Length: 252
Image 1 (cartoon, rainbow, N blue to C red):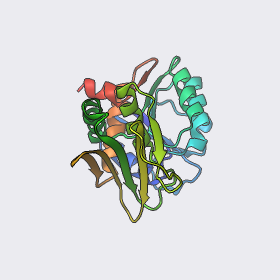
Image 2 (cartoon, helix red, strand yellow):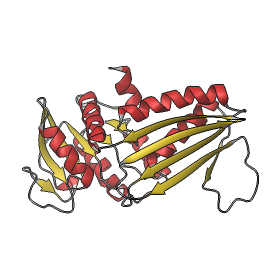
Image 3 (spheres, rainbow, N blue to C red):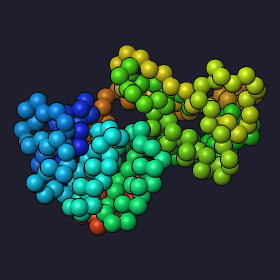
Image 4 (cartoon, rainbow, N blue to C red):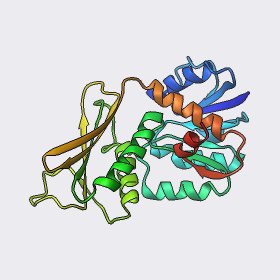
């Protein structure tokens, strides 16, 4: 039985994830971490990971970048594997996460959806074929309560495309302050916020007289919980190392 703790258990995503963990035959929800506890979780909820007295096999994190350092310190102190799904992490925080992975197992993905990660593989291949003749634009849409923009997923897609092209790509966010023609090396990134949109990511390749669009649409947060559970199952028992959804997909 894999013993699980959830960081951010009382957030919107934490609630979905906790219900999903309870439905797994091979997992037990031992506790959670959150500054707020409504008493409905059926397990202890600690305000900070450092307050936890339970031993768990893995922590799944869907919280906030402000709580990131405390979680890393908990993981190091207890040698507990961490699944990091929080978005909006700074460059320094990501570097710190890689350093920590030399001592404990760390899984990181800005998007836990299997579909999104397959989309990334598709657009990387497309970019290698089309680059130079097609402009690349990324459009992401989310609900009006999402704080960070552009989304971590949009940036992850852009980073993977740039890496695949092995070129000094330039990210351009919207275009209201730019009064010049578009350059080939640009990747345009645009954020839309409205209503209750769970999440949509489109990668548009626009060429002369033709366009190719690859889109992923999430209609429920449960797909991210499913990905988080798959990652936790993959990570449990590992001693150290830095992992991503690519590793999970390759082990299917």
